[in-house]
Image 1 (tube, one colour):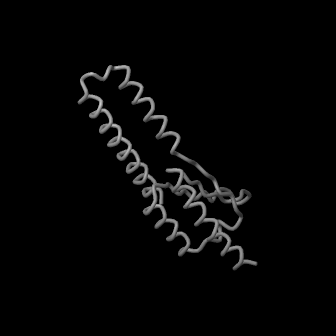
Image 2 (cartoon, rainbow, N blue to C red):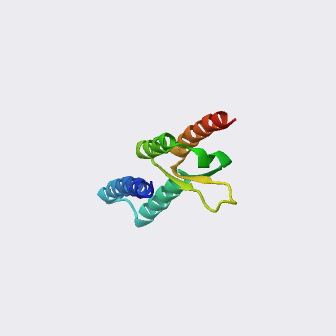
Image 3 (cartoon, rainbow, N blue to C red):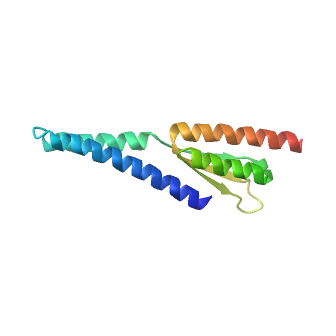
Length: 126
């Protein structure tokens, strides 16, 4: 899943770069656009990109009981969405975690799907 996270990050970076290059081209085609306007646009684009990013960590004792099927579904989610999903099954005395990172809407979608899967695992265990 780590290599998939890397691919997701690369897709996000490529999309961001393409958007930035398009905006720069529009400004550069307009010879009347002062350098200050281009700098302001660049700054605003960066702010929008940062604002659209989200991180979320789900901590649940039942994460360790997710089946291979559940893990495959997480992998499919990662491929479908612009989100990185990282499972952290650290030391035995710590509660396992799932780290989500990506576009805000995709992080929320992935979180909802993961919580549903965890709810099902909880019901199975209960």
